[in-house]
Image (cartoon, rainbow, N blue to C red):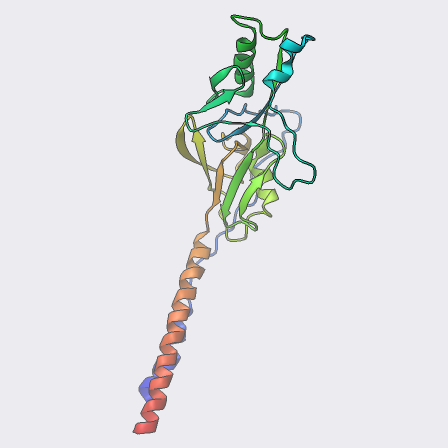
Amino acid sequence: MKFFRFLLLALPFALISCGTQKMVPYYLENVTDTSGMESVKTPELRIQKNDMLSIQVYSLSTKPELSDALYNLPCNSAAGSTAANVCGFLVDAAGNIEYPRLGTIHAEGLTKQELAAEIKKRLTQPVELLKDPIVIIRFLNFRITILGEIAQAGTLAVAGERLTILEAIGMAGGITEYGKKNTVKIIRENSGKREVGYIDLSSKDIFESPYYNLIQNDIVLVEPTKQKIRQAEQSQIAQRISLALGIITSAAVIYNLFK
């Protein structure tokens, strides 16, 4: 019995761990006041595969046979319909869109302005199909995914076409106390290639990072701190010790019954 009592007293000490606690960096911790000194830089988004684009064409033409309606997708949904009414051009796996009467147009890698210029060129050269056409393009599916040590992980759909890393984290409820703020991982597809980068949310140079402004389909991953990993390991150890104590207690009871 002394042996069993010794085990019961000794095993809980395995849960005790010693170590120094490090201060968790806060958002923009090292940023200084630069009021009126810095210009805001907003990168131009480039079209990717599987993007859904809204493309509208207008012109000065008044002739029915040259109507700009011929180059716009119809967007009429039945009254009371619950189905999503998406009127847009899907960029296919080859990076192309199929445009009415203009054929296949390669869109991947272009900005909205560059694609608009290409469509306008096809509407005016070599034959003038429309008089002074205007092409307006918008993204219909700007979204990013945020995972890890975040209050509300998931996919965020954005109505506009601009989203910063701080705005995304704010929309997701913020980083938990166990999330690393100085090494937030960004997974991005760029020109058909996947790249991985990091951004320090406490750095004074955060606004200069190429990952401060997110682009469509970015994946943001907030990794756990060593403290969180250590707690998870301790939880597993505690479960194993609890199971071991249960086995030892049962063995002690059986021993007392049959000694």
